[in-house]
Length: 103
Image 1 (cartoon, helix red, strand yellow):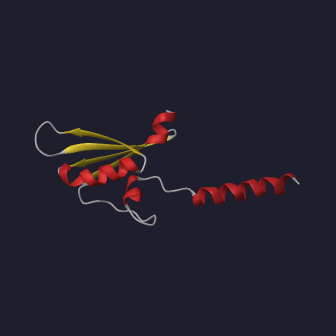
Image 2 (cartoon, rainbow, N blue to C red):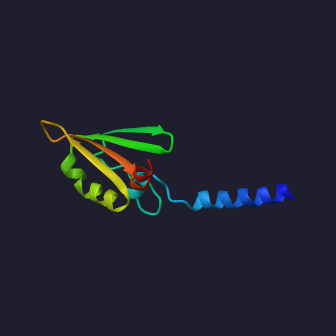
Image 3 (cartoon, helix red, strand yellow):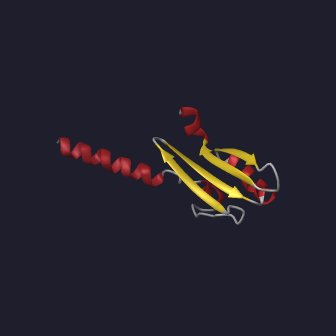
């Protein structure tokens, strides 16, 4: 009987994981769970630690990114922009807002 209960819990967990929204900024920019990597995202990096993922983008086209950054903010991403002291470039960091609160 224990095996059946564990199997039911596993099946329920697998369904929940499948239904969970994808958690990358590129999925948040896309439509219908498709990824969209914008042209302004020139250099992209991902850093993972326990319970947290940080997405970092270097761009020379910050003005082109503004509309997408507002969309990501509304979609629940914590968006941090560090502008370059000279020029139009910036380093942009994205973390899920709910994970920032939990950390």
